[in-house]
Length: 98
Image: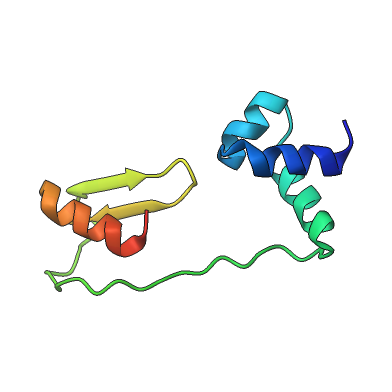
């Protein structure tokens, strides 16, 4: 199948890049490269980081443990010194647009 057709199939699939690539047997980086070429650019898309205001707490020491650690399928990790209740966690994830 031609690369452009594969990109078009991905874009109309409604699936995440990871899901689509696993089903098609290609790597995510390959699909991303094909998409950049289809758009006419070869530069990778820059990742944007966003600072989130959160109430300050005591400084963490090397012996500290995390009360909460989330690892997303997209590769980001969120650590918080305290476990959050459902309302706090929902507020945090909404502010991060997860």
